[in-house]
Length: 204
Image 1 (cartoon, rainbow, N blue to C red):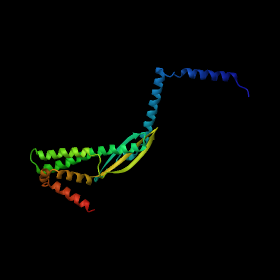
Image 2 (cartoon, rainbow, N blue to C red):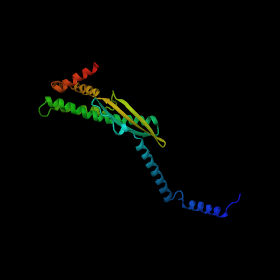
Image 3 (cartoon, rainbow, N blue to C red):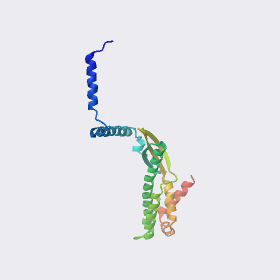
Image 4 (cartoon, rainbow, N blue to C red):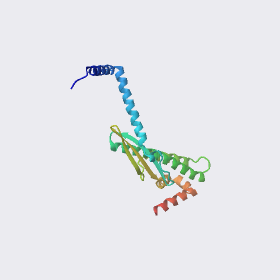
């Protein structure tokens, strides 16, 4: 087999030039090149993540009887990414439920109080604080979950559902802890309606 000396020489020159063009380790050019490569890898990973986001994550279901909340976290440990995603969803859910409970109690109070009622105001603040801190919400359900791989890490998407009937019970229980406020709020039609709704749900 004959070799073409011209081609061999040309190949050697290209290899030499390529070696010269590559920045040496430790130089600013080498560091910049590595940073550019890392940024490119991150951009590609983000692009893949966006493409793989579940539709139920960007458009959660709407239900008059339930709250839906999504969560997403990333970890090198598969189970950790799922657990963290659920925890994040529950935390956001707790804040939403605290706001809802506040609105409910305010509506009760508006039917029974006149002026600035310290007992009702105290109950509202206590309820908001207690529910917001309670991220271990009994009754929540993980409706959907999906995991995608990002390099050596896992990203989990979850969809959590919480029945509003459970939140109604929390509201009533919180009110009953404050006997003075309960005595006043029981006079409201909204309070009585909510109690009847809870009792009816127990029989189903």
